[in-house]
Image (spheres, rainbow, N blue to C red):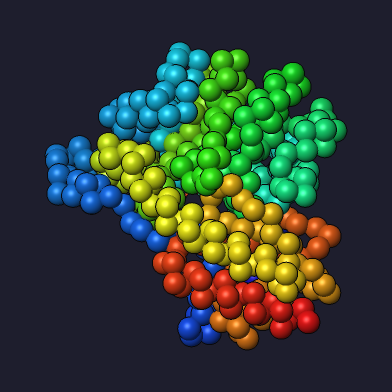
Length: 389
Ligand SMILES: Cc1ncc(COP(=O)(O)O)c(C=O)c1O
């Protein structure tokens, strides 16, 4: 009998396939589970398939760091939307999605045994990657409204700390970190000689006037900041596996080794489609915002009604609500399974995101139309009332 390595045995089991199995076993379930959007790529991106392949070269390996035309489009976007200007100090590397970018960032900056600070609740794949890389995740709780606790982060830094990871807008809480907090954290990382990895997967998804800020835009940030982006959410392109990272130029040799070994290059057909999507630009994801904002408002109103036994800080971004259950529930996995089997609504148990001391659930409202989302949150509210009675 072949046993899995001890390193992998320490990694938490992915929660989405477990929830997906419960959903498949319970016909009629409305899923507020997986974090995907309800739309696909722009028509222009799909039309670009007609011009691929153009030559034999399109069947061969491409550049390790990505195709020059896509990198140029990314650099233009970063300069105009994120304030991250192209400079000799930093490089853009196209990756097979931003999960792969995160793993590459980690392997590039953290030795085995190094500590990496995550803000709890955290995105589970970040924690899994850290364990997989033989590093130690150190979870620093966020505040009651899921904002940064800068003093807590400062206290958690040790001589073994390699990096602090932030995600804004946040998965799983929807929190958007103010510019001042991200500037302070980025300066803290610089002063302690550690890397700030910032994930901007949900950059276009903000509500009620909230604004995102890219720490990579801080002039002094280029030497210690890694910024991660993806087309998966904003452009409805999760299956195409295209993201990118902005890295300090000094890390290029390390990232080159990782990317050359793991992906060799991101798929050329996906990069071709991605370029066409980027030419459509921010107007595409922004065109879906008004509908998402209506869904968010209705979901929030349903779940914050006085008789629903949970607390849900209003999120400013992404397409998640992170509900803290009141009452006697303590096993989020069990609550999530019963919500599916008894109330036909799926959410993701908060334990997967590293919540401790309380039972939480992540509600994802990006994938549904308005009526289905309203029915799903209604079932969730009724289910919680019944289960926590
Ligand atoms: C914060 C965050 N980063 C990265 C990803 C994965 O992105 P990609 O599809 O580009 O790997 C997700 C997906 O849920 C996410 O929530």
